[in-house]
Image (cartoon, rainbow, N blue to C red; front, side, top):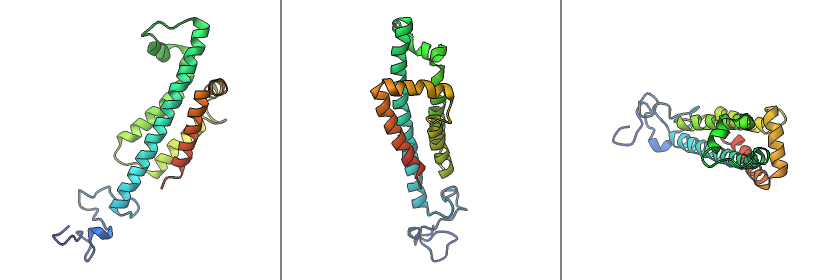
Amino acid sequence: SDNNGRVKGGPGRTAAEGHVDTACPMNRGKVEMGMPSEQFLATQETRRSGLRALRAALLQVHKEVIGYDRGQYERLHGPIPAGQFVQLVTEESFFRWLDPLSRLIIEIDEELDGDEHHDETCRAVAGATQKLFSEQGDQAFRQRYQEALQDEASVTVAHGRLMSVIGQLRQLP
């Protein structure tokens, strides 16, 4: 922009009017479908916040189902020695049903590592999450998750929060 606050390439237009010169390297990638830069940044922050909320809700579900599953495992195999639980979760077939949930959290982490978050990506992540927890999701996951939902109140509470976040994320601008 020039000293009068006018955006290059936009005669008579000021930055406050929301017009952005995308040829300028500082502004490149800051416009989404003609959206002014301030609105673009606000939308990006809203999407980032939505993804963070989804990640937090998934982590809470993950924590609760792992706690539930640990109890189930210990009923079958006895107490887990101190320091061996993480190894069991990552290597023991008893816990493999949690892999789709873990992968979903990793996908969200990868999306959050990027600079821009697109509407389609946010909706796709919300859709993948919703699918995982539905009849169309991974059958092994669904079966064990339903057991945890029925048997453990903390899983039910975490699930309710997750479903609320999914609904909110699917409505993001």
